[in-house]
Image 1 (spheres, each protein chain N blue to C red):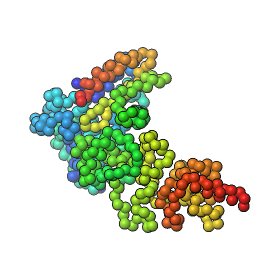
Image 2: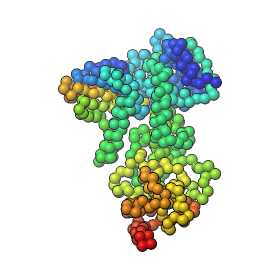
Image 3: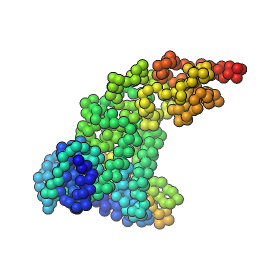
Image 4: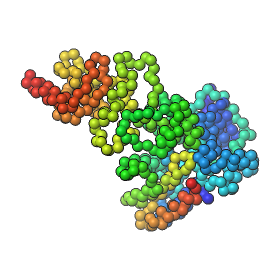
Length: 348
Length: 126
C-alpha cells in the first residue's frame, strides 16, 4: 500500500491542486504541488486554535466560512475585517499544518483519495514543500524522543501525581496549562483541543512532565520482573536527593526519576564468586558509579579514594536485587565500614 | 498589519541588520529567513537560538526571586555582532521569536529595539 509520503510526493511532482484524503485520519490540501493546509483527526484545526485561545469568536469564524468562495477565501476575509493580522493568520495556519502533518505522516492503513475540486475555506496562507514537511516531521519525532523516549503516556489520560517525588519543580507555561487542564480523563489530544494548543506541543509537554516524574504512569504489565517492588517508591522519596542542597531548585527536567529502567541496575558483572568479601557493598557502589556516568571495572574497587562521595551515593535507599537483603545505612556508618574493609584488605 | 514575509523584510530594513530569522520556539523551527541567513543553515541556527532562549529562561527562572520569568527581549553582544531575540506570545501556539543580528559598527541598538517593538505590535496583537 502506498504511503502518504509517496502519494504526496507524486502529487507535488504533478503540481496538483486539490485535497488528498487519508480516510478518517485527515486531509492534505495542495495548491500547485505545495501543501497549503492539513487537518488531522487528532489535532485542533487552525480555527479551533484561534477560537479556543479567545483570539476571535466562533461566530466570526462561521460567518467568514459561509462567506468564503474560491475567489475570496475565508482567510482574507478574516484579515480584511480586522479580526486578525496577516501574521497571526499565517503563523496559526503554519502551526496547524505542521501539527497535523506530524500525525498524518504516521497514519497507516488508510484509504487515500485525491479530489482535485476540493479547496480549504481559509485559502492558501502559507506554502510548504513536501520535503520540508517531512524534514520537520523527522525533527519533531527526534525532539519528542529526546524529551522522553517512551510513548506509554501518549494516548492515555493525563493524570498528574497528587504528591510528587521532587521538592521543587520548574514548569514552562504550556506544562502549567497541561497540569491545570488535566482532569484525569483527558488524553493529550483532548487537552490540546480543550486548551487550544497544537497537539504536538501538548504531547511534548506531556512527555517532559512524564520524564520529570510528575505524571502517573500506567500499571506495569502483570509479567513485570518478579521480586521487584512494583514502583520502587523509596528511590523517588524526597530523601533521595542528598546531592541537591536544600533551597536550590532541583532541575526536574534534568533529573529523571523515572528515566532509568525499573529493574535494579545490573551490578557491573555481578561479583564473581571468588571476588573480595563484601559483595554486599561492591555491586551497589558499582551501580551508583555507573549512574554517575563512569563505567567501573568489575571486581576492582576503584572508588576507594573517593569513598566519602561514592559512599554517600551508595547509601541511597533503593531496591536491591533479589539476591541481596534490602539495606539502608547512615553514610558515616558506611564510610566507616569502607575504611575498615580497606584497612583489613591492606593487612591481608 | 503585517504578514510573516513582510515582517522579515522590515526587520532586514533596520539599519545594520545582517540576518534575520523567525523561529517557532516550541519546535525550534525556522519559520522564515531573511538577509545573510538565507546562506546559512537556518534550521541549525534556529534550533540553536531557540535552545539559547530556553536555557536563558531556565536560568533566569532559577535566579528570579519569584521563580517565574518573562523575557521581553534578549540582547547578546558578541564579536560578530549584536544578536537580538524577541519572543512574541501568541494565544494559539508557543512564542514566535524574531531574531536579528546587527553589525556592531553600523547599527544603533536603541533604534533597533524600538523598531522591533513597533514591528511586533503590527505582526501579532495580543
